[in-house]
Length: 184
Image (cartoon, rainbow, N blue to C red; front, top):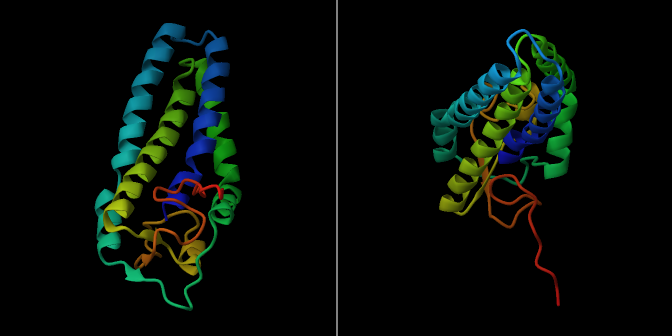
């Protein structure tokens, strides 16, 4: 489940930094200094809002999570991330273009706002990882519930989470890639 949250973090982060870097090159209506300062403020606000948003819903779903059954379909980390990025590619492109467009008003502000959303998603994924470590389980969303509302692990389509042991699948708590111990 943290994989879905984390899937959008990297594209938002890198597209935001790219838009901010290009935006600094444009003098803009407000000037570079004001644009970058406004962008830094937007970065912090966006990261906090994204990271703390809907935590109550995540906690409630985690509290009522049931053990994954034999017929629950759970998918790999790479497949989940790929599906999320495919479903949101046009939104990511539009967000990137909007961040570039705001550079003419306030240089780098839109790009830093986009990067702040990505940082907030990473922060939220690490918080979910701490929830998983406390319970010594991995939280999953059934694939059929995820498809109805692609990429919303706490959306209306999700009725409950499923749990497995920490060693299940290829994801570590928090949605990162699980590191396998090297056999010596």
